[in-house]
Amino acid sequence: MSQIRITLNGQVRPVNAETSLLAVLESLDLDPRLVVVEHNRRIVRRPDFEATSLSDGDAIEVVHFVGGG
Amino acid sequence: MTATVAVPVDQPLSVGGREFRSRLMVGTGKYRDHATMTQALEASGAEVVTVAVRRVDLDRRNEQGILHHLDTARFFLLANTAGCYTADDAIRYARLARAAGFNEFVKLEVIGDRETLLPDTQGLLEAARTLAREGFRVLAYTNDDLVTALRLEDAGCAAVMPLASPIGSGLGLLNPYTVRLIKRRLSVPVVVDAGVGTASDACVTMEQGVDGILMNTALADARDPVLMAHAMRLAVDAGRAAFLAGRMPRREVAVPSSPTTGLIA
Image 1 (cartoon, rainbow over the protein chains, first blue to last red):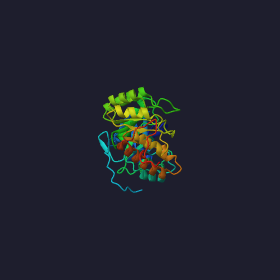
Image 2 (image 1 turned 135 degrees about the horizontal axis):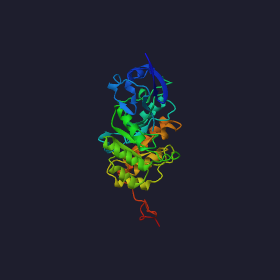
Image 3 (image 1 turned 60 degrees about the vertical axis):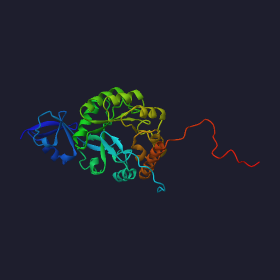
Image 4 (image 1 turned 180 degrees about the vertical axis):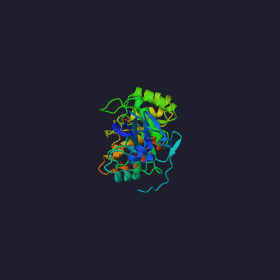
């Protein structure tokens, strides 16, 4: 399986080509229900995580709620 | 501390189509630990709590987000756009917050100055217009300028949030006149946000007639946040009741409280 490079929360990481967004989240032990994800600046709805496949050079932001005023 | 007379029940706080019993909103940032935060929130009686949107720290996967420590059935989450210095950033953060799936409310912050964290009013108005058009219920953190507040209302904000003093400063209500003026002239709710330091600040703020108050540092940085949260709960109730009671006028001279007749010679 060939590898591609994506930027995930500002860090460049190699992942397998045709990996899904859901697979990436799971590999990071992240609960999909507790995060919000941007894929190349577009917010991805949770039901679409599995169907969203990643390409070389993609930028992903994974955010969640933290304490704040 | 129990009441010995029946106190008339206040109207609920109505913002963006939702009603809340408590006029005190509380932030979830800066507490020394989650247990302290949880107890402080409980003691405050608040229903609306603010949260921020930040990257998940991928290298410390065991650090959990705030949702692990907040009962979302009990608290209404008001996401903020803290840390945003442009309208585009604030819009982006607001959309991310809404995508979490709780509600369409956002505490909109567009900051113009790092030292004071005072708002950038141009960016704020631009972001407010865009977000209001997209169906957000925008609660806009703003300065205490009446014209800006009116423009935010025109832009479709669900509430306007003039600051008492700079975020985290604890300076209290620096300009009661302007806050009172804003409350008198706006149709949407006015919730004072930022700068409250101690209970008397909260009480004085509510006495201006505003609809609510939001604070974070006043609790988190108190020596005893839980006791301060309790004090704030009382202070907000006291200030609100004093406002509803209609205070006596101020006078420049004395007016006796005891009879001036019947004095012995």
